[in-house]
Each structure stands twice: as C-alpha cells, then as structure tokens.
Length: 453
Ligand code: GLN
Image (cartoon, rainbow, N blue to C red; front, top):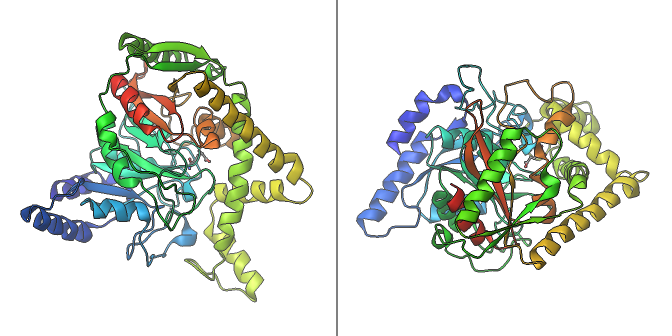
C-alpha cells in the first residue's frame, strides 16, 4: 500500500483520484497485516484498490463527480465495497468519473478530467481515458492501484478499459448488488471491476458478486470461483461474429484486430460462426431514451434539501431551482431534459414505450443466437481508439453518444460483457475486443478472454 501511495503522489497530474485516503489505506493495511500474522488471509488480503466516486464509502466523501454532491459524506458503505473490505482489500482513494457516470471521456466530471497514460506515436498531446470510469482505467493502467471498482450503464467499464489497454467486465444485470452505488439508470446500471489482467478481474468479480437483501434486483445465485475459468480451454466452443457490428466508418485496423481475435480463438479450437443480431441498429437510439428517462427520475432526489449542495432561495421552489441550476453540469441537464421530455404525457408512447419494445427485440436477438448454440459473441469494444480532450462531442453531443454503439446493446439485454486488450492500432494506441455472454455465464467470458489476452 505504501508503494502505491508514493506512486499516487507522482501520478497526480493524471487526475485519476479525486480524493486520496492515505490514512485510511495505512490503517486498513495494518489491519490486514495483523490478520495475515494470525493466518487469516482473505481472498483479496492487502490488495490496494481505487474506488470509483460513484460508490458510497462510509465517512469518506462521495461526489459522483458532481457539484451537487460536492460535500456529501455517506453514513453507509456500498455492498460492493463492503464485500471488498470483507475480503481483505485496502482502499487507496476515490476515482474520477464523468458526472453521475454520464459520458464517454471523463470530460463531464466536475473535477479536471482524468488523463490517459497512453500517447499517439510521436505525439505528446494528452488523450482521454474513456468514460465514465476514466479515473478507474487511468489508475489501473498507470499502476496507481492494483484494481478498481467501476460501473457500466452503457459501456462505462468496457470502453475506458479498451482505451487504456486494461480489462473490464460488466457482469450480468443482477449479478452484483447496486446498493450504495449512486444511481444513473437503474435498469441498466451494473458494477464491475477494471484490472490489468483477466485473472485479476476474475478475482475481483468473485468478491463483488453475490446476493444482497438490500437490492431486490440482485439475484440469489451462488457465485462461482471465476479464477478457475481463467485459462480453461475453449476447444469446441462456438463464437459468434455478429455481422451488424461491421458499422460504417469503422477504421480498418479495428476490423483487422477483430478478425485477428477470431483467428486466435479458431486456432485454440473454437468454431467461429457468423451470426445476425438484426435489431442492433436500434440499440443506441433506444438506449438514449431509456437511460435519460431513468436518470431524470433518479436525479429528482437532488433538490438541495436532502443531500449535498444547497443554494438558498426565496421559497422552496426557488431553492430547488437555484440548487439544481448551480449543482448539475451541462451534460446532466441535457439528460434530464431529454428524460422528462420522453416521459411526458404527450410523448411517452412515441418514445419511451417504443424504446422499451425495441429493448425486448434486442434481447430476443441475443436469445436466438444463444439458442442456436453460440457460447459467446465477439465484437470490437469501441469503434475508435482514445482521442484528445475536446476532440469529440463538443459541437454535437451525438458524436460522443455514437462511441457507445457496441456496448449499449449488452446493457439493454442485461447480459455480461468483458473488454480485453487485443493489440495496438497504427497510432500505437490500445484497442479492445468485447465478448458478450449468456446471462449469468461470466465464466465463459473469462475463459475466452484469457485466450485473447
Ligand atoms: N457513455 C454512456 C452514457 O453516457 C454510458 C455511460 C455509462 O455506462 N455509465 O450514457
């Protein structure tokens, strides 16, 4: 832990941490040493982790990187972080993210955005680490923690992992408790780890997962020992390549790494088959209706009365307005406006109901593929590698939304997805491949990903 704390000081210019907790880290590390001395060694004993600032940590400021929660100190600990500390892990601090996890570049954080440690060949211009879990991906890729917690509503674990050459898994919806995680879109949100290897993510997920009476959407299923799946043979498995993911404008180098990944799996004994997921093209527009709709409802609780920031007003309505005007950033306000619009009486059927119907069709596409014998689906994680600050989405936010084209389908269907580094593009930047699995079959993903890694 001390070595990581020293590295964190040196790595401050990367803005990975929004709060360092060295006293807590050393106290936890000492307690861990004492347990080791007694022969009580937990599965994550002494492992120093960073925590995305979306997870409530008891007594430690939790902001979701929003000014509206600028001074919020939770009186409770999220189930995920409780599980990690139960298993012996040590908390180094809280990690940067897009405000309320809305974004793909870490540029919507109320703090200065985290900076990707990677650079284009022969260029020193800083690049974004992806988002929303950009602090997690930066910290893991820069050795500022051994692993990190992250959350994924539409790609926020997998896309930052792909942009930084790290591994990230979004578990099946319901595999991990959402209790104590600041909500974005509750039917899509799922927590998972980002780490440097497939084995590390398997170890971490084993501690993240498990039933929780405090989250009724969290299923009561036993948690397999995911580490046993890592390195297991993929011989005889069937891997689907969905033709709809060959989207227009995808750089040829990404398509090449995708096909190289398929060739590696074939060599390892897997059958590669082309499949069709015909409703793929509706996933992104449907996601950008469902996610803002749920967000607008979840964010209603930040009213200046219950949590965080309060700007005084002449009466209660004025207090709400002034607090929300000052506390929320631009992207969050945009989502609230989209969300309330699609939920409004006049447009509910035209947008929200239609998006929910599309969600069912997207889910059925996957069900059909798995029913035909496919064990996992291989796609690129993102349609591009990391880009510069201000390079995307400044003039038109949709440009940023388009980056989520390969990841949102997985959240809409509630399935597990892992991003694993697949190589470098001609600019020298990491590219990730994504594997999508059957519901509650994270094990197959760990096995297949460890062949590609
Ligand atoms: N980039 C997507 C969005 O902005 C996904 C974010 C996430 O998964 N939290 O909604």
